[in-house]
Image (cartoon, rainbow, N blue to C red; front, side, top):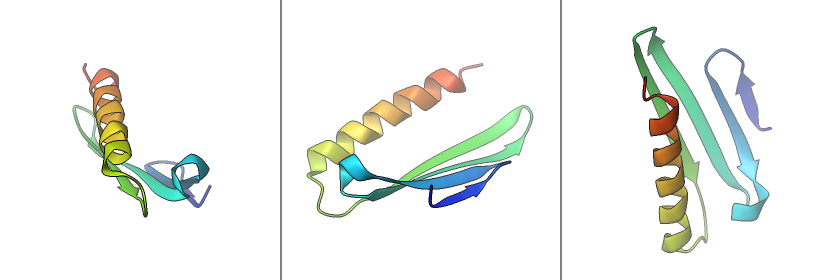
Length: 66
């Protein structure tokens, strides 16, 4: 774990993605929540980055569908 703020955000490095930094931030108030995911990756094939994007976009839509 690189960084953690228990209430709203964290950052960790992902060994399997060349130690890319994965950031998750949740902001807002009940009823109006915004979630952001960032991947700071170096030397990864674009196809791998696009796969990451697709997986997490679908996952966030599932989580925040309500």
